[in-house]
Each structure stands twice: as C-alpha cells, then as structure tokens.
Length: 302
Image: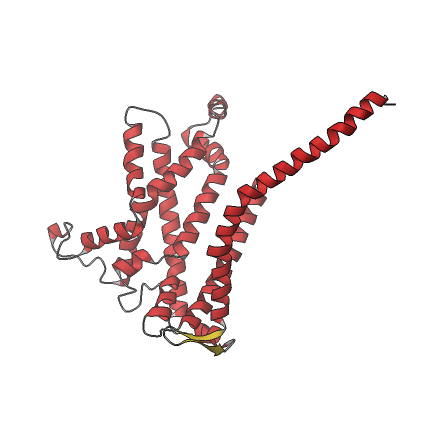
C-alpha cells in the first residue's frame, strides 16, 4: 500500500503531467494548422468548386447557367475523342513506366559502388531533373524541329509527323528528363541494403544474376513500388510535353486525357462544366488506382 507521502507526490505531479500533455497537443495543432489550411484552400475548396461546376451548365464566358446534372457526364462519355485519349494515355503510361524504371534501375546499379567516376556520373544523370518539364519540352521541340535539328545530319527526319514517331519522341524526352530522379530514389533503396546480405549470398555461392534476382530485387520492392506509383500517376496526368511537342497531333492521335480537359475548357468547346466533369472522373480513377497500388504494396510488405 502506497504511503501518504507517495500519494501526495503523485497528486501534485498529476496537474503538471496534464499541463505538459496539453502543451504538446497545442504545439501539435500549431504545427499542423498551416498545412491543414493550405490543403483546405488549395485542394479541398477547388475540388468542391469543380464538383459544383461538373453538374452545371458553366460556360467559359457565360458563367454558371444553372444545374444540368448529369448532362455533362453523359456528354463526356459520348465525346468521340474520350476513348482514343484514354487508350493513348494508357499506352503512353505503360511504355514510359517500363522503359523509365528499367533505365533508372540500371543507372542506380551502375553508380551504386563508390569509384573514381561515381560522383561525376551521379551528377550527370541527375542534371536533367533540375530542368523544368516545359523547358525540357521546348528544348526537345527545337531538337526535333526540321529547321533547327542537329539530328538531320543524314537528311530530314519527321520526329513528330506520325503517331508512332510522336509517341516515341515524347517518351525519349520523358526518359531523359526523369531517369536521374528515379535513379536517385532507387539508389537510396540500394544503399539501404546491408552489405552483410550480399556477403552471405556470396558465401552461399550466388553469382551476380542470382544476387540481383533473389537479394537486390526483393529488398528493393518498396523503392520500386514508390517509383512505379509516381511514374504511373505522372504519366496519366501528362500534358506539358504533348501540348508543346504535338498539341495532340497528328490528327488527334497523341491527345491525352488531361489535354482533352484543356480542350473542353479552352479550345473550341469553351465548356468549363464538361471539363470539370471529366476532371472529376479522372480524379476518381486516380484515387482507385492509387488505392489498389498502395494495397498491393502493403500486402507484399506484410
């Protein structure tokens, strides 16, 4: 049984603990409030406004003309360019993700070990990531232009003249721009793998391929999953590169979903309500896709 002195000390310490707990709670709210306000103003409020526009007859110049739900969504689903844009965006996403992650992993493995040229190579691979996507797109536009391209040494080549060439030319731009960034993410994952694991694999007689397949890849799954999520999401929302390089051409063959939103809002149709409806559909699709990706990642880790 506790003595009266101990009980008295505990009773006097209780208000102090409550005060400290309250101070920590206030400090936590103080740190979280700026972020919460930022998210509220620049994410939640715009989504509410877009959702409101998606069920309204909202013209670019006429403004809100009243509710028309679900007419905007029906018009979006009946648009002749919607499904070609969806298919092209998916194709572009798959091609870009596979090539970009494979190259980034190769570069990360190349500069994993510290050698005389490691610092130079890492910096060289990472430099394109410092360039803005719009600036990089303008740079490649000049590179592909028949009037200024240094690639026309053996004769003029139409890099953007056909759907296939336009796709691969844009993929080349994205791979050049983002390979160093994803290399850095994978390099962090590689350096987090203990050298004892590789030493144990060598003692068991594993060669380089077996070590890569059964040691490196399994322990790098979290980093690869993160890169995949970022790459897939970024590719599905592609706009700048296609708007600058192809503007959806030739003959709307390289138009993406986000570019279709832009065209509905500001090109020809000038219908913000229809563009908002398509934006809501894209947001729902991305939320579902990211939820599935995170669930798959969590299941693999468990």
